[in-house]
Image 1: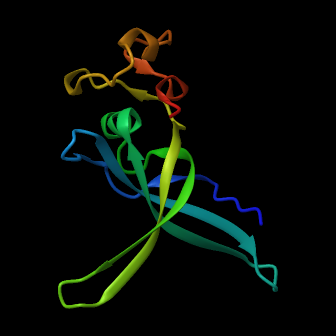
Image 2: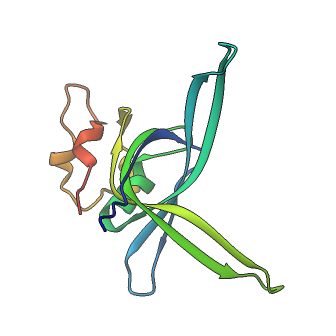
Length: 144
């Protein structure tokens, strides 16, 4: 039996990225993502629905997301669904389904933050515009 686990999402960040490092030094960033959907109901009235998701980004992409994204930033995410379960301190079982990002593409131009350092790619490959210190989103996308 065939199976497929792939998601494509476009939305806006609900909060600033949260960068941390694993004990082995691997960067991981959690992104809160809101994906809006507009549709017409049976009466023809336009309705809006919002889906809130947690997206986990790893390695160099995690560092780039933390450096260049902020609350409200529009992004495109390609990834897979990943389930997690745990037990709370009071013994209740909890579970969630998150998105593990394989690729994150920034959908808005932004100013490079010279005080925050640069991601693993060279600064010359990131800055490619007639406006100084402007980074194009497509230049800071890394494929794993």
